[in-house]
Image (tube, rainbow, N blue to C red; front, top):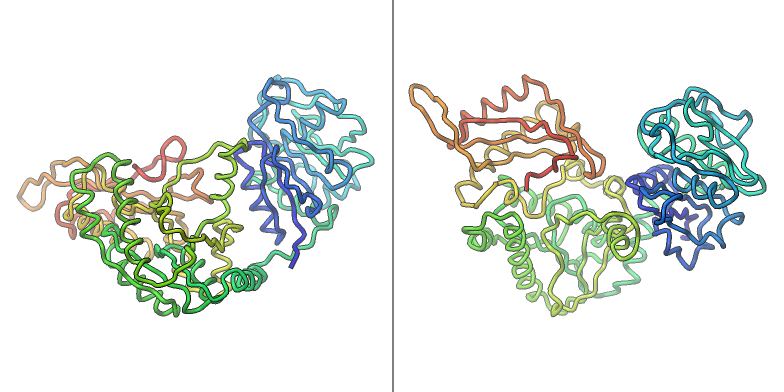
Length: 511
């Protein structure tokens, strides 16, 4: 099925992925491409969105897209930098703003009878994020909306389906942003809303069957959402020709290896569990540097996975749970403007001598879409709602060197914390939670005895994609009960602290 597509040209904005997710929420398929790498099949896109950018159209590092085959031929929505670009290079004027236009603002003028602002009323809150401002509209520009400080907050160009705004409709703080995107994409550009989880499953299964035929495929399962949904799609397509390997690196949560294996068996998957925990712990002995720990885990995982894959005869394909943000980052790194973020996966790539072709059934999806696709296949809601868990597991939540005893302590602490979040109805309100074992001992008193034992930190954050995160204000009563239970039940811990740092400046994980 050929979807109506929307092209998003990325000029390096931190919000570009968020634009795409908002478009997808309207059940419209879209793709992000660097501003200087417009796809050769641009005719297949029904509308184009120009993103914001940290660059200035007045500076030396102006990002020039080639809009020759787009402008005046397709509906365009230019956001922030895009709006300033169209103004600056089409007869308008962009200058440095007297006051930095950043944060919440309200539309105090909206031109009447404009489809673009249909069902959006005066006073609507928008989010500004720029230091330049449009002083004069481009040739053919018609003013559509203003705020108190920003006269040219929105405009259109006569004779074209080109609309431009100096605010960000994709962020939560723009209260009518969803409506604005709806007006542009559905009412103006007339894009059909045919991108649904059900249609994705049907099309993907059909594509996989054609692509793979009767070939065997091997997949490394992690127990997480992405690899599990990828496995179910492949299972639907090729059944027993999918061979799943679930490796226990000894750094999983308490009972996780057995629990996840049981869950996979209930899903009908062809899964082999490999307990290599001793091999991983041996490789980690004496290592305390986070990067060295990551590399050791990655190396051993590849060795174990490779050993197991070689036991399956005539495997042709390696399946991976790669999702769309990973694809965007890899494209950006080779010439797009977006800053790339360090990967936290435990596998940076499998050895060349395996010579397997790669299949990535989820590479068009964002994380929230992966969950919706899983739900449409009736996958267990507890598995789909599972918090993200780092590839290196508890290794990067044990600061300093690792021992079997430290792993045991942290597994027990984490078990109490996560179970309490579930029993208090808090688990689904948190994006990611976990415990960190600190490399410090502190004095305590238990009964009549002084103790000198470990300190653990609890961490719970709310986020949409992990790029930014706020700490969760958990109830004092919950923290009190959890702290008491940890200290009373986990031998070796006498102090519990709660991490109230947001990202940025802190990261979600401590290593």
